[in-house]
Length: 463
Ligand code: LLP
Image 1: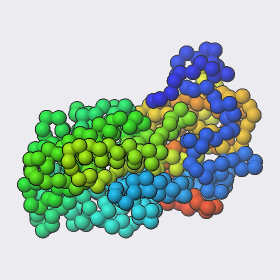
Image 2 (image 1 turned 90 degrees about the horizontal axis):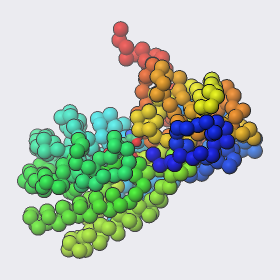
Image 3 (image 1 turned 45 degrees about the horizontal axis):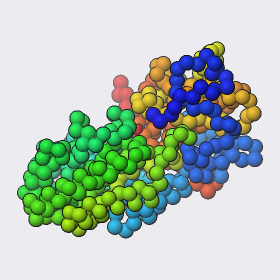
Image 4 (image 1 turned 90 degrees about the vertical axis):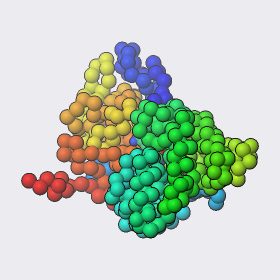
């Protein structure tokens, strides 16, 4: 998405005419700390270690492909977000990026809240003991059964996404004899600079209620008129993998304008606004993400300023980062199986996973980095395409990257920044077994989501 074509590849480059790739790093053995989790380093023998454990041991004990999640990095990122926003704001981790019970417990220990968007995510959160009042429930088409469970559990907020849902949630809350705290999700009309499929604040899409034509004001009118709903605020999420803060600032300004209109019309100052998630991370050395404290400052400054000029009390802010917390904390470890050099084009490196453990390259044209991690090498760089083992030519994990030319079957390679939307979007295509997630911390490693087995596949196939 953000790389420029570079003509300087040392091998094949004279004939390579298509593809967007950066020049190879001066030394392919150096792991760019921007894209690797914080405890990743190379040991004296040149093998990658995470949390103090070498990849050879990890591969032997847990197999490949596998996701290795750097727990202390995950926790540090949670703390960075909550410290950056401070006590007057709430950080909701977006569970869709990656959720399992261990993660829910870490979130609780680090004081975060949780955004869920399905009954399955809600069950995972509650089962791991997340207090319901710290859960926000999202979705553009929550089922009646899901809403009932959320209301019964006592979730802290349901984010209303449509006019039908206002009535549906009100009805269910009334029948349970509760007053449900809700927010209304609005689309603020911002074109976020990201892939079309992950941009969500322009009007021509399925999420939210438009601000522009007065629909959002009408939704507020209807919600305020229903006794079984307690309207606590307005929600806006403009998209995902965004680097430019301008979209968030426009969104914050428009949401505050709506709060002012609501105050003028109803005499009510809604106490909260949620500015969603969507902050970008570094997938390659060319990406430059913002730090949580810069994001927090930019957002709270704009909200404070707009509220002052509208004569409003500053509402409590919440945000919903998913990728920015978990994305950088994991890498996927693969074993190289076959290598196919195509003279004058590129070299195809096939690994033991593929689009079933990382669909993002095929789906969004996403860019990733890759490194040889079981050893170092002084061989010259070769331009590679890392592909999977699926029966599909679009089964690409890393489109264009450089690996040492002496790469051989049996080598371990790793793709960093796969913590978000890889395991959570993994599939069983070709009856692949979804890889495990292994948490690594302080010299210890434990499976937090186990590898699927063929018995798991057959269990659902009832014959
Ligand atoms: N809040 C809401 C309401 C959302 O819809 C999302 C993401 C988030 C928060 C978290 O966004 P994040 O901070 O993780 O960017 N599968 C795509 C991303 C889809 C995001 C959907 N909603 C991908 O792999 O890039």
